[in-house]
Image 1 (tube, rainbow, N blue to C red):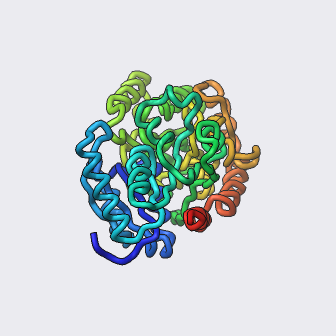
Image 2: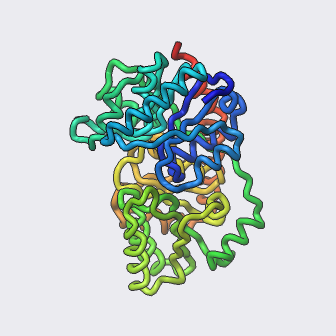
Image 3: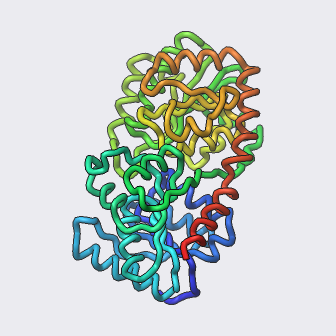
Length: 379
């Protein structure tokens, strides 16, 4: 584990690309300073390409033995490897990117005499003891600083760990240019004509993410507005709820809307597909800790309809920046989808305002600067 000194060690468990992984990759891609001062410990859970994408971004990644928390022998082996890495590279701060990484990273930091920071990507509602064991170990384990993706996440964590500093660190997203020709080509691939209004929902397929709410609303809007079209982008991640997609597809077939509601599965060209949409929906059933998709769509100038609560309510702070609806309420979603379907001028105005808002407040460069400042504060 020899190599140049590093100030920060990021501990990463999953190899599949979820929201936390996308944000971390974006941070490293945008910040030469963060790349120069950091090393990532990959605990190799899953079969995704996240470590390869980090290495392609010129990030140093060290593969360590993986261990589930219930495997005490394996945990001991991983902790020893992390401690050795911390000491050999002079790491000052160990950063856990989520629950499992924080459990191991926080313990390893204590064993090696380093400081630890927890990137909090969830809203841990009180009482804490009702959460799954993995989450309890993460939120109650050793930590010096908690960096929370929203005020909702921060306020909940302050109730659980009032003596640990909790700081707000909103997620950020890079500006991505999608040429108009590429957006038109993507629309054609989706079967959408120039005068049709395309609604999209993006993210991993899980019931709490509410893609079934979007499909229910899409069925009603499709009947009411013949020149509307819909796309569901994403699939199962981490092996969770693999049957959910089949149930959504079956429902669409039963309604005879196969040609109007498209399921793309995982795509590597998400910005291109977002740019092909006229409206992006975010339909989580429970308060979203942040909602990365929301700022990604807004950065591209696409109006967003999101469920109220959590991060989206903090991002969409006024009516000119987007639309908020009641969670798990297809009828409310239908109403707002039809309003935007019928009003091109409003779609363009909201899209333009939201793009400026995200560029000013939720850029990835801003997040990288704030992250480094927070980590450097741990002396």
